[in-house]
Amino acid sequence: MSDPDLSGRLDIFPLSDILLMINSNRKTGALHCRASGVTKTVEWEKGEIVFARSSAPEDRLGNYLLARGLVTSEQLKRADPMVGSQTRLGKSLVRLRVLTPTKLWEAVRGQVTEIVYSLFHWEEGNFEFLEGDPPTEKISIETTVINIIMEGTRRLDEWTQVKEKIPNDQVVLTRAKSLEEVARSVHLAELEETVFKLVDGRRTVREVVDRSSEGDFEIWQALYSLLSAGVIRPQVLTFQTQATTEKKEESSEIDAKLERTLSRYGKLVENLFARVSAKEGPKEVDRLRKLIRLANFEKADLFREVAIEPSGKIDHGVLLANVAEYPPGERIRATEAALERLLRMLTDELKGKVDLEDLTPEGGSENS
Image (cartoon, rainbow, N blue to C red; front, side):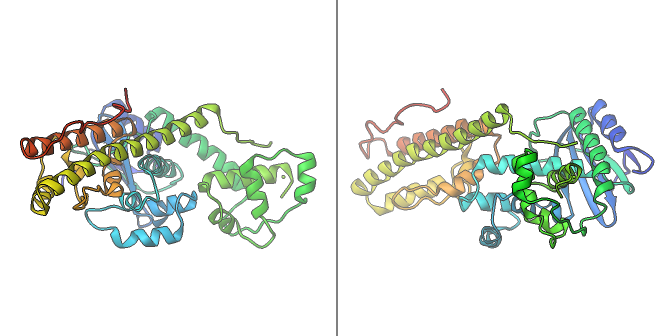
């Protein structure tokens, strides 16, 4: 193992200084932070954070999704047998149609940034930075290192204030007023009202957090606001901005367009196989299915492990899971390119054998 290019103790070197140094020098490699048996790694490419991973169970994707109400325990159990060295949990959940590719991408982005933010709370530990090749697994976190430092520092400052009122997660909180009294005197944000209802004089802070669909920081912040206001006692209201709403709508539209693209091209492939079956018989159908499995054209990786039935029906779940590895803005183009190339390959194979007139996508590209 090579010597680290930068190393030291986190109680001597502030995390913000370490991140700035890697960013300003446009380094590529991995920053490993270790404390109390936990390792958290931040991966870099040309001075930008492109991924993060953690050995802490609470940082795992399944726990992240569960804590935010994006999946249920039962859905995680269904996905578990599918998880292996070649298939990650996220892809398994997309295959099962529990998550859309966009939802998975957003969740992984959130998981990555939360791992980085969590390092700002480490008061001790060791770190080392090793230069190396860019990571094969990366994601656009849509923010700069400077913004991450500012947000991480803000959270740390607010967390310090919160901890003054709530020293640990075993504290039991009770209501100082009924919900009706609160409604007459205080305007609660939706999350604060949800948290207020979970406070019953018996649950610990940890139990309140575990029953909520937001992240730990957001729930602790809501509890701090409620305590400061004196209702369990300055108030922090959280509103969904128009930009956030529009972004969610845009993400939903991308997933809907992707589904329509799969349906449109999938129908064409089914029609093609129906003509082949009627004219040439099952042996030719089997030959074409094998040809697809062995295809090596551009974007053929999207058909990795995709089952194509003798009828020509394409397993949308697996294809969606594969395309989930692409950034949101590239998914429809990549899927269309792959399916168009697939159709072209098949029609070239069948020239002179089967009448394939009018076998073209209707409606054109969704991206035009």
